[in-house]
Length: 174
Image: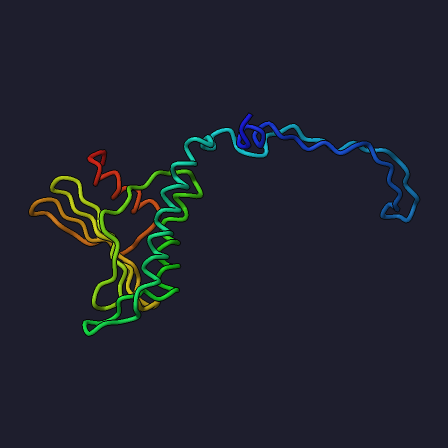
């Protein structure tokens, strides 16, 4: 039985224990009580271990790619080459909810740093192009640029739903 299945079936049962105490009026109390619960610890609609393993693998792969970026030289004649640690953390924080919920996300075709030090992640599917830009400066919000042939736009209010919807759009499901 997998660890996830064991967690779903896990119950908490505490043996009968005596307790001594006082009521609000100060009278002694003596009694026995049984504490038990047979409700699942993990909600039934949680992803299975097989589903989460591919999501965790994708998230770990993304984290590894960021780790490689952090080993680059700090700058060259064109500007920053290595993202800041806070920039990497902000980027990974955008994908953590996917890993946490067991939701798939596509692997970026390209991940790099531009001449301003912003992290750029790129996805393509046919004529559809999606780019996540995480500016180097912490006070600047990340945003998405998307295009399909001659239609394009920006999404400045990023949320988990926005990313999920854009990934669905990229794959042709949205």
